[in-house]
Image (cartoon, helix red, strand yellow):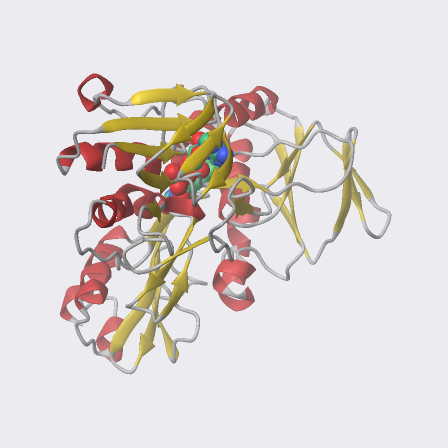
Length: 388
Ligand code: FAD
């Protein structure tokens, strides 16, 4: 292999570049990234950067020794898989190996008004300007990102309203019953949460609801989800992400995909998964690159992510849809720390922890190893999770 191109300058992209060199690939290497910045971490964008505690989240990579041509500010515009050519705004680039890591892009709402989203550092810095004490901030979407922005905006003294179409926050991610357990956190932080509300459009100066109500705002933030950035791809199967096997290969072995844009086959869960998690962008590139270089490798880590909501560390590992039962540890209504375990028989499928990182860490090990657990012990906060 003489020329490998990595498309997408996010975490998965830089990790792919590092993994290629670490595995001894000595050929020509090019990274094509649409943003003008070197790869940086996104999790702080809705947290430390937005609150003003950090300015720069650039990934610490040794670019000099990586010997990688950086085509920043350029994007892929097309793909000719038969010819092995990537079309870009910098011209056509032939490749022997291609790593697709173009991540995801935010979904917007209709209407002429300005909509803030948070995907890039520039988005975060632009919104930060608006989060001044007393500013009316309307956030559309009570998902992970919406809750994080609400946390930050409330901390900065804004008057925050969160609108959610579903009956509860996090309903899409966790289901309405579990999501509803997080609703009191909003009130506690002084944030107004309105669920079951349908937004019609974003207008100049505020948000118009379907029922005719208008909510005035100095800043409107739309956090209703993302879609994989694959509009430029052709000749490969795309179905809620670029379809790849358990080794992260597309149907063409010289093309692999990783990160938010990839829908990979999980042997562990017996289904295709696409996640938008930092941990997968960090770790999956090792496997993708090994596959590209002809090694046998499989990515099957249980998906893991965290979110910081209203002063609580919320963490999740696994994949719970279809699990047989749910076991609570602690009382979500009374305790600040609690957890939920999803089980099939005596095997853990997924775990959600609130303000109890130790439980998450121990459960993650049990889950990854496939260790059988005792549900009664799991439910008892006096028994360490590792002994359940
Ligand atoms: P991205 O980070 O999206 O990088 C893809 C890059 O490719 C982008 O720079 C994009 O501009 C570029 N690109 C797109 N199209 C093209 C093209 N055609 N040509 C060239 N370049 C292109 N995860 C957690 O687990 N915990 C958290 O707390 C958390 N917080 C988050 C907070 C925010 C505000 C955001 C946005 C994400 C958060 N995430 C979190 C998710 C995590 O950051 C992502 O899963 C991770 O960034 C995915 O990395 P990636 O490299 O796959 O994609």
